[in-house]
Length: 260
Image 1 (tube, rainbow, N blue to C red):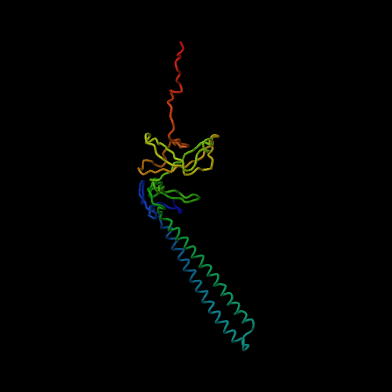
Image 2: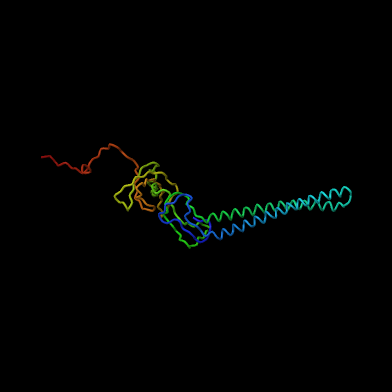
């Protein structure tokens, strides 16, 4: 996403582009933000000059006060003149502190402007594949209360998750680590293996039906699965090995009457 507003000047990634973390994938027109950086830097230089001026004024007031002290010893000046020189020195020292605060403020403004300029470069946060691109060159990005999404990047398509809903009547039998299988409409004859990794306690209520989200982890080494696919999931609740099976017809067998 973008934390600053402006028009898209360059796009360096498209659908299915493979990107690396820290790679430049888009550029918002930086001219306005570069001008703000220059203005903030000039303000800082001006504040530093004012600080230097006030520090020189303190040195001058110290010299003046020292001369007043010597004159005061010989009663060449009045007490009022001496007090005035001392007050001027205190005022000059206070002005130095004010100018120091101004320098700190201007330096913070410069850092903020430089940060805004940095935000015009949209970098990939992770290694992955671009699955969605929402902007084109020339479009305007408006960063307001919500950060606008420019790209969606899938970090690793070989490792995916299935979000499934389990009814409240069955959620008590679901446990972490249980195995599951599922199918997708794109490959109806293929059964994909997965495992339960998370059972979320936040209930989802729709038309008075309560369900809970269960998250399954699945390996997607063949890249058959794609984000957003619909799945039909079966979670293995229990398993019995070496069980004896009886044909269903045996339960419907009726022996013939052998009486004469």
